[in-house]
Amino acid sequence: MKKLSVKDLAKKMKELDFCMMTTADGRGSMHSRPMSNNREVEYDGNSYFFSYEDTGKIRQLRESPLVSLTFQGKDMLFIQLYGHASIITQKGRMKEHWSDDLNRWFPEGLETEGVVMIHVEGKRAHYWAKENEGMLRLDE
Image 1 (cartoon, one colour):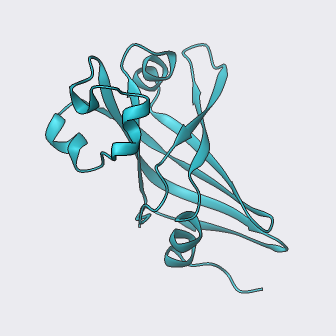
Image 2 (cartoon, rainbow, N blue to C red; image 1 turned 180 degrees about the vertical axis):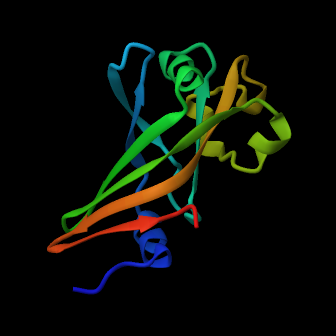
């Protein structure tokens, strides 16, 4: 089977909306929750998510920026991304990745009190696509 390139992986990810974001707390416990990447995003090694600042995931990411994102697609496609997260509070940077679909979670848009953006810089991707499996470095 042919190995996927980052471009191939990006094309497949464009169809995926939700993933499971896994973080670790200061005691080493893992915590996962569904997150939306708003689909139709051109994946380039970076993922962006929005959250309220006063949440467990933000506290955990501030303790340890290591994060795992797990996606599942059609036809037995599974993707696990490993990366480092940073918390963005600058409205200008957040606006670059904002979608009006986010208003269902943040009713005042970017003016919603406590809204922050999580930027995950991908380091490595592991994928399974039917019988095809591989690993890609994203930070080269």
